Amino acid sequence: MGIASDEIETVGSWRMVNGRMTEDDACRRISLLIKSELQHLATTTDGWEKLYRDSRDGRYWELTYPRGEMQGGGPQALTLTSPEKARQKYGWT
Image (cartoon, rainbow, N blue to C red; front, side):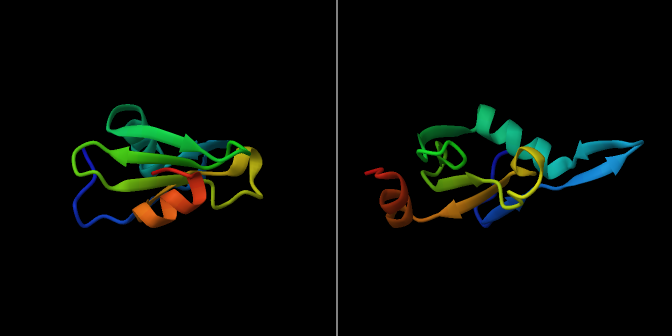
């Protein structure tokens, strides 16, 4: 269930099912990845964006909420980022 070597982004979405807002498979996958496959490294000062590293291949991943206008920030996105961008944004070395 890990992240494929050619994968660069997973974006979740919410949909209405039986009158309730429900996470899609991508949202559930992101949650599993950040709990079991990725190592948390840093969080922005506002707490909304987080930096992770894949312990299998060392790549850096950023967890964001691209639909911030939605309740609770909306669904999550997990996006590959470079070590340079991680260092610049999070002060990670």
